[in-house]
Picture 1 (tube, rainbow, N blue to C red):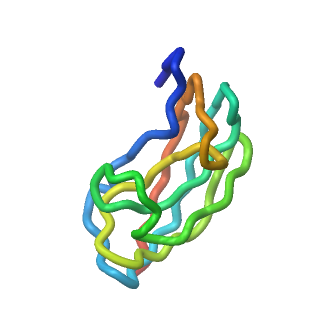
Picture 2: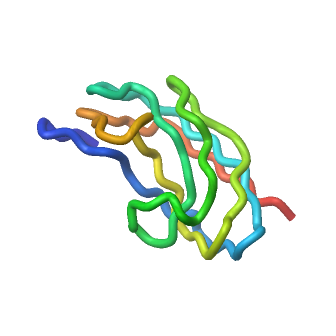
Amino acid sequence: FASADGFAGVFIPLGKELAAGEKATVKVEYEAEGVSTTARLYFTKGSIDVNTATGQIAATPDVVQGELEAKGASDMVQVKVASWGQTFSTLKIKKVVITFAE
């Protein structure tokens, strides 16, 4: 993904919908350029850019990973800039691994 104007992140479908209380471990390997070069993760319902479906995994360079618990219905994971107001100019997703808790 690239944009000269910058962008805040991308949405990746989970492949199924999680209900409140369900957990998944998410790992995203990436390369980023722009005002922000680190990404954070959280669950959303659809492509609505609000952090209401889960807590978040804090931004780290190159690989961001951890366990998220859905606070409400969730069907996407958002890979987003480290802080509000920042943007990526490019974001290359290298690998995504999602492991659902049983």
